[in-house]
Amino acid sequence: MMITGRHLSRRAILRGLGAGIALPFLDAMSPAFAATGGAKPPRLAFVYVPNGIVMNEWTPSTEGPLSELPRILSPLAPYREDLLVLSGLTQNAGRALGDGPGDHARAAATYLTGVHPKKTDGADIQAGISVDQVAAQSIGNATRFPSIELACEDGRLVGACDSGYSCAYSNSISWRTPSTPMPAEINPRAVFERLFGSDAESSDARARRRRYEKSILDFVLEDAHRLSGQLGPTDRRKMDEYLSAVREIERRIEIAEKDNLEIAPTIDRPDGVPAAFDDYAKLMFDLMLAAFQTGLTRVSTFMLGREGSNRTYRELGISDAHHPLTHHRGNTEWIEKIARINTYHVEQLSYFLGKLKSTADGDGTLLDHTLLVYGSGLSDGNHHEHGDLPVLVAGGGVTSGHIRYPRETPMNNLHLTLLDRVGVKIETLGDSNGELEPLPIG
Image 1: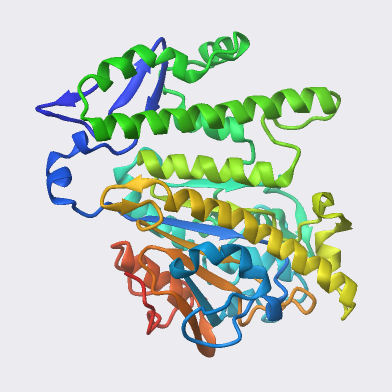
Image 2: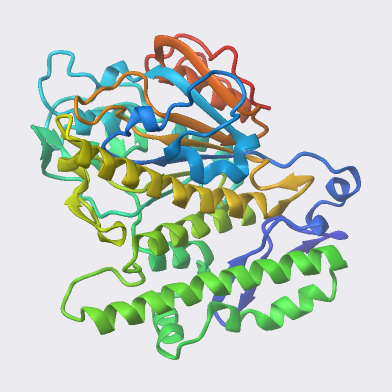
């Protein structure tokens, strides 16, 4: 425990028997903040869905206020006032530009970079620095993790995945350097241990704790009780709610691990991955929320599926693989199945927005202090369209509505604007040619 002067360090950690967990932001960490209601640091999140969207079911019928949400966005109705839908944005770098097939690889690789990737399936991959990593390199030095990268589908970073393009392109949207993709973690247990396991907790100690079915909280309770006696009633409530949330995440991971052993003991499946997709997505979203809440990071990316994903959605009664369905050639039955998958993905986002909006954070909520972008690197998956992409911005003080920009407006103009809103000042990013105007955010 680190307490300096009369207030608690922002980097304070509950410790005990080799384990440790970070704390959420408490008023005791900044008395001046508590007295003045000062602003909290912003968070930046990007949530990616693969294979495009049924655009006529996504795009609002009119510009201006979101009086009625289209079908795919309808699960977000409770958060209509926190949503901004943008039309007309393009990632031109995702197009072939003389390189032939490989649109899925290019869709993911260009989504946050705006740089045309080198067509190779070898080690000489080359794309661009992504917007999240530009932010991480600037504002990430104030947090334990500059950024965290999550995904709900396994994907290797070597070998060929799409018409001569490396798998690194299809399976990554985050690039630390033009030749260094950031691998996404798909195992909730690994994310949990990374976020809440102390650096001092050895792998042996972690294994021993799990073998005896001890919660990480069991090892820090004494420190938590001691700290609680020094906090005011508001901070005590915050800490109780946070520790309960950590335990709930841990419990869900444990249930998933036991279910996997009972259902398919011979399958090599990562520990802690729930069998149902919605349980999986919600668990990963909750881990992202906890990372934001504790100040462990301010920047995160989350791929609900890798680009070109062949996941089946049997929970929706759809046994067809996602990617082949998107090549529907006008088949109305297939289009309907894609729209249902698109809506199902948005339902998971709605869950996350609800959690952000219900989590107090300084003078507002986590949603108030988080800028989140949701969308895909393709619009029409049937024709591999990289123009007029589906783009949704949520939180961060947006003015609700639908804005249509001129066709071929670089999506990287949005990225440049978001960086400016979180205090990162750069002149260009990828193929940007200026900030988006107007963009009613904060």
